[in-house]
Amino acid sequence: MTMMVPKSLKCPLCVREFESQMVTSFSVGEKESDFCPRYLGANPLPAFLHVCPGCGFVGFEADYRNLDPAKAESVKRVLAGLQWQEGQRLGGPERYRRAALIAMYSGKKSAQIADLYLQATWCSRMDGEPEEEEKSARKKAVKYFELALAAQEFDTADLPVVHYLLGELYRRLGESKRAREHFERLDEFQGVEPWLIDWRDKQLKQC
Image (cartoon, rainbow, N blue to C red):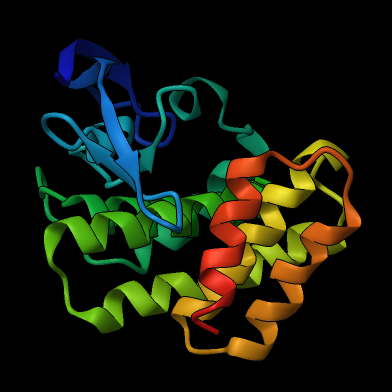
């Protein structure tokens, strides 16, 4: 069951104080091949991101406390270019897409931006958005995961999962060659979890 409690927040950009909802518990039944969770109960993903009703700032609870003041002006300029009306409501996919855009201008690492775009694809699927919306976010997730790899942002222990995930994202984009390249990288690592090898082998058969 998904449970939430009220949470008071203060926007780091427009200093608007408002009440949001904080997720306190949720349950996952299983996951799809791109790690998209299938929740037992309401989808909590949208509620992980809070939306300021005044200016449209979107972020996790920690973003409301830790936004670098030096980056605030850049974020304000980004938000100024997006349509926003007082009290506008955003669905899950748009929350994650906007959070990813804000993350770019607030100095977050490529891995964090990639993860936001990945979760945007999950929300698109759950909400039944057109395939092109999910595909667009998936392409951006791949771009930033690749940038994060190049910048060596991941711990060595996490690399098998990252390569598997990139392989699966490329496979879903119809880029079989790139998918196989990342799937086969798992053979370079010692002690890879058996379940990950099993998942990789299943997806390789579909490339």
